[in-house]
Image (cartoon, rainbow, N blue to C red; front, side, top):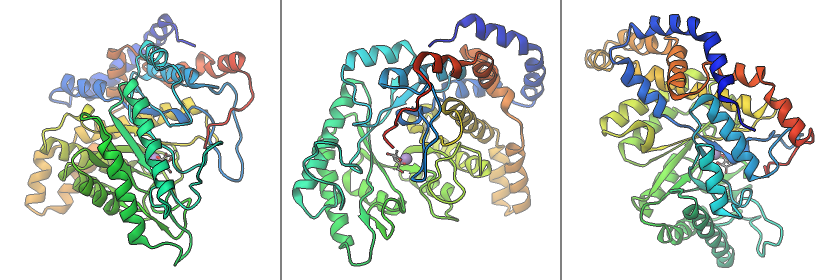
Length: 424
Ligand code: LRH
Ligand code: MN
């Protein structure tokens, strides 16, 4: 389903006066407000194809209605999201959950919805029906060469699907590891994983990247072969310049300083991009910025500083993507909130008075440094995001339009109230 343009214009007109007052207030404080707005307009967040349905845990799943039943409907839902916030112009597919049977049709449908194809995700953490060899004891780390070959072949197949869709990256997350001490020779597991990734690396088209995602635990609970940024960085350094490290915010143990990891990966030119979400305990995959928005701001502060230091174009130099699971929220509302939280953190980081901060750091004026950073964090940048959406043809308040137009009810009428499995 599409949103009629006049309905968006009606909504924006009804909020215009109040918006203008708020925008004028903050714009008065910003030197090059149009430059900042252009950065916000260009900043697009990719939406995972597996996040348009209701997620769940091993204890249960409470499916909502109107969920997409196939790849076409997932593309339509992201198209709807993008029509509202003009900030979700890409989809990331997971294979085999979303095999593009007819690539040219899928590509055309995505283009109609203003969407590009971001990284392609492979899957050697589940056994598919009809699969010859099991990944129970791992895939690329497996002691049996035949299992490793099967995993390599799957990743090369995923690259093929991606080439047809003009994607430019393969994203690899391996659940490989062990549940008990003694179960695995961890050096052997790492070396076999490297050997497998090298075969995949050789199959990458020249203009492609391979993104190596790390995660400390789950589904393995003693060791994970690619368990932290160091192990991913070691692999991507040994593989070559087309290999980089992907940072999923939920894949860090309590107390880890993620923004420090980001600054170092950027320094090394080895930061692939992000799977944005939020968490309080483990890999909770909650709405971005819903638990620790200050950490998200600090990460973007390092990103802006590090990308500017390397002359990188913010919007296109690394992968910006959400990886979340919606257990109790409407998936589209959850994604609207997540994209908003990401762009709020980015806008606040763009407002940091960097010359003053550098001076305070030079003077070891710790108090002043915090004041400068938190002034940006405590600035309500939402009118800037609304203005950027308005100029890009979106809604001043996407969530309000989504609810006022009873879009979920329309999707339920169209698709039915029954829940649809998301593969996870
Ligand atoms: C693993 C992960 C990975 C995906 C999966 C859906 O926890 O973050 O990025 O493949 O979630
Ligand atoms: Mn992830």
